[in-house]
Structures are given as structure tokens and as C-alpha cells.
Image (cartoon, rainbow, N blue to C red):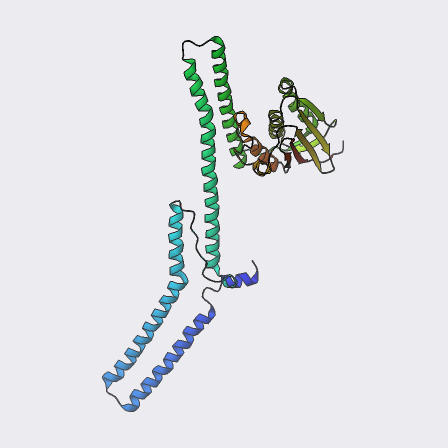
Length: 356
């Protein structure tokens, strides 16, 4: 803590205040001696000689008591009562509370810093409450949609006059909705564990190129079905230092999104390169692309820029990707243009070279 700040923190009751008390008491004592001398010279009666000093010191004591009380109220009582009232409002869920500081900026003491910390705490709580409310609203909406679909198709299956083809279609729709619901819950649990640090990444060197090849081959049937031209430009081997199981989620999410948003006959490409410090992987597609507004929010939870594909996802994939890369000391960026596709670029630290 800087010396000037420490000095301000210790100045709630400055030495000058006690100097005032001492000066007042000395002055009152001098006046008392003067009164006693005057009474003796005038040779007033004994009752008067007793009454005058008593009345005098009663007035002095009352004045000092009133002054001390006002200083205590001004210095501690009033700010603490205001702080207590504000704390009670926050406890009742009101996060719009704000307490002004007692002094100007250049004269802050420790009560002012306490008030500033309180205001900052309330602002953070308000932000967390807003995020919690939005999260619950989004989760409720995402869960309600597949549940409503399951309910509707289940009611249709109860009709006796259904053809075999209709039964198969309705059953497939129910299975699709249950799969979407399962993926949503799984992603929520994974994201929650990552954010609460219940999952500890086990970072160790492994071959990035092998993992990218395996993940890409996992989508082979999908891109062939959509007649998408898939290209991969990978090195023979590239070692990175990361958690292999978590990074598999990253590549699967990026590849799934690229294929999902690319129209039949389009192109998806994966490029990988290595520098001295980082390994870089780019996943590009020729899909619908995104607006500038979508790019700004693409890593937010439950955000879906293209609502035409909302039934195929839940808006948690990229939030999960960003959180994993943060834990891996990596980073992700996106370049996109509406109607021309998107390119997601991931950078990860390479594994330290060891002598064989």
C-alpha cells in the first residue's frame, strides 16, 4: 500500500482533533482559575463560590459531550447506519443500491474505501444475478422446445389411423428431440464443471495432427451425405501440450458447426501449422457466414446467430470451446462474412522439445 494512501486510511480521527480537545480543556481550566480568583476577591458567599464553578464545569462538560457526540455521529454512526440499510436492501435482492463516499477523492479514508468496495461488490452481485436469470431463462427455453416436440409427436403416435411411414417419421422426430435434450444437458454439465473448476485439465504432450485426422474422419459420413468438399492440410506430426480429451470436444464442435452451416456442395477445410511457440489450426467453411453483431456474441452462452439452424444446436458449443481453450492457455478467433462463410482459428502452445 502506498505511503500516501496509508496516511489517508489512518486519518479518520486526526491528531488535530485531540489537539483541539487539549486546547479547549486548558482554556477552560484557565477560565476556571480566573473565576475562582474573581469570587475570592469579591468575597462572595460560600454557596455562590460553590455554585459558579459547578455551573461552569457543567456547561463545559455538556458542550464537550455534544461536540463529541456530533463527531461520533458524523464520523461513524451515520455512515454505518447507511451502510447497514444498504446491506439490508442487498439482502432482499435489490442490487441497484449505491452509497456515495463521504469525502472527495483526494481525502478518502478507510470508510470511503469500505464504501467503494461495497459498491463494487453490489455491482458484481447485480451482474451475476443478471447472468443467472438469463441462464435460467435460456435453459428453460432450450429444454421446453424439445419437450414440446416430444409431447406433440407422442400424441400423434396415439392416433389409430397412422401409416407405417408416419409412425417412423414421428418416432424419428421424438428420438431427435431426445438426442438434442441429452446433448443440451451434457453440455450444461460440462460447462458448469469447467467454470467451477471441477474438471482439472491433464495437460501432456500428444500428436495434434493424429487427433485432427481422427476427429475429421468421424464426420466423413456427414460430409459425404451433404456432398461437401472436405480438405485437410496437416503436417505429418505436431506435438502440443494440452488435455487430449477436452481438445477433442473443441475440434468436434468446430467441425460440426462448419459442416452444419455449409450448404450441400460447399467446402470445409482444416489447415494446421506450427511455429516455435504455437500450433495454429483453422477450420473454414463456405457456409452462410455471420453478421458483425453475431461475431461479437458468438461465444456467449445460448447465443445462436442463425436461427434457421437453431433446431440443430443449443448455443453452448462455442462457449464450451472458449472455456476449454482458456484452460489450455490457448485462444480462438473468428473471421466471418455473411454469405461467404466463416473461419475459426485456434492457437495452442506447442509441447516443449525434449532430447531423445
